[in-house]
Length: 74
Image (cartoon, rainbow, N blue to C red; front, side):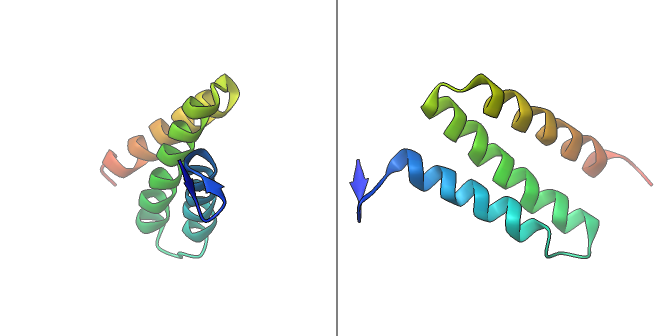
């Protein structure tokens, strides 16, 4: 699928990049981790579309770390 000259795969990659980038604008660590997790999940989808294990493995690991700290009672 091609939307305005951008494939679906590229669109998912750009959205993942945007999510990760925007997450670092938050001072609140909880918000940062939530937005970062969304970006990482989009990168897992992107990596799957590209069949790229390094992208998938790295972003699954970051997602697990984010979820761990989001669930952790402080």
